[in-house]
Length: 282
Ligand SMILES: Nc1ncnc2c1ncn2[C@@H]1O[C@H](COP(=O)(O)OP(=O)(O)O)[C@@H](O)[C@H]1O
Ligand SMILES: [Mg+2]
Image 1: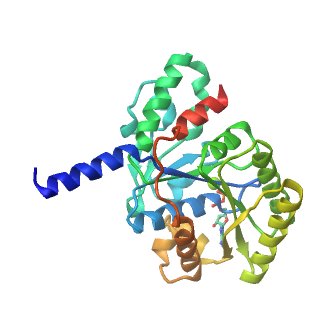
Image 2: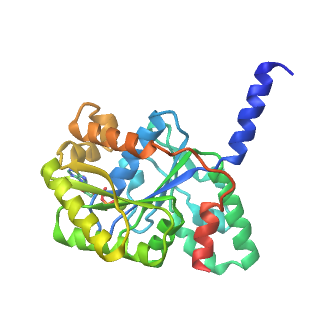
């Protein structure tokens, strides 16, 4: 066996054992920037050489396909009904990010037998093996499915804005996760801040309350300031990091990606993400 073949084999074997780390992007309140953050974060992670899948788990109001200019006809519900194979429901988005649409269709698993559900969860989990990272764009609010997705993730990024309603709703999400003994890490993203100083103040307020009343540490993922180029990019149906590579918002998202990538080496032999989600429901 040549040295090259051995190196390849070693790599394949390590890859087989590795499972994507899962980052869930969530919020209490809608319209705070989850989808834009998920898309641009996924693109930056992929640009750093990692294999990234982006999962749209907000079927009701999911607009990931609009921002990424994708026409996705199929979603997980087509896999559940047996009409499509998993690899037929993914599309390649900008920046080589692979996108799965409509993961919130997982609730329709209720119609399947326990055996069929477990088989499907296994299939979805082999999908997870193909990536270094999966980013889940969840719906807003504290519904069982949103909490289920976050609970199964290794790291939950809670997005808030400086609006008091968004802050209370973000705290409510942190409280639910803490109350359910979430074993992952929770980080806060303050989006649409007027200044970095304002964003940091919001972060400290929420982190302090979480420490005092929930006894947990909420990490600071990023402060992203309000930037007109973000809605401008959405109007062009392009992710802002690609449409405006030199904009301050792009630098802030890139810096956040670097921070989140630290210590992100895939772990081995853990229970798969989708199996955890399925077990959460049933
Ligand atoms: N940093 C920002 N600066 C300016 N506008 C923003 C920013 N982040 C998000 N937006 C705008 O807020 C709206 C909601 O964003 P979206 O990502 O769809 O939120 P969510 O997924 O939480 O509902 C979009 O129209 C987007 O253009
Ligand atoms: Mg959204």
